[in-house]
Image (tube, rainbow, N blue to C red; front, side, top):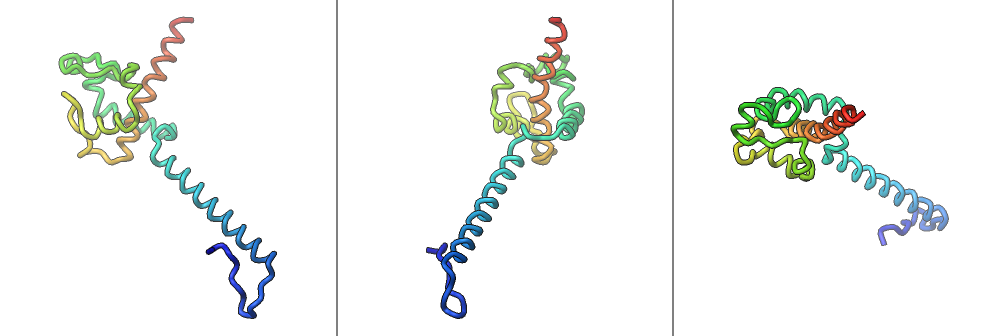
Length: 147
């Protein structure tokens, strides 16, 4: 009912004009909805982060995670071995959802302390994106060795 053209001050309205205006309003609403949806996905999905954000994630990783997880994410450091730090490149870790990885960074898990109090959401997303990139680096490294 809200899509019907309203009469003008003169009381009469061209039906074709009203239909065009209604279609334009509908198209505009559709565009706004689609753009809002895409923006929401882009913000919520760390997989869509830029290379610069992955680099920022690496800087955070170097500052906060390397002591236990090692530079390559393997967990093969003295502290990491003693605490049982996960190999972040492993299929077990890479199969986790973004929400699960986010929660582990934010809240900690087992011997891993929570980093949520010291990091904002963007930083946690950057770290998560970098953790995802570690598996890709490992695959690339293995491909070079097999040549």
